[in-house]
Length: 65
Image (cartoon, rainbow, N blue to C red):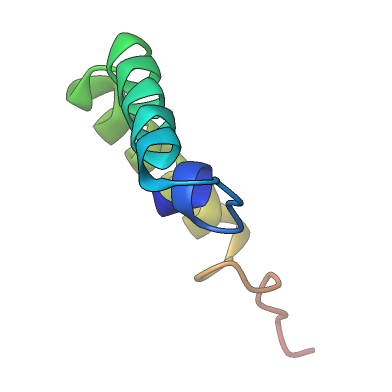
């Protein structure tokens, strides 16, 4: 939430910032995905990383020759 409304914001006053925050929350709630879908996506990404030997966003593991 901080990324969308607070970070690097130049709102003239707190009222404008609050309105921006509420607008973001309305958008987020309207476009929310079901938690089961999110869990399945996370599981699939983990499976793909595991197959490629990628851990925590690093390069693929190299095998010794």
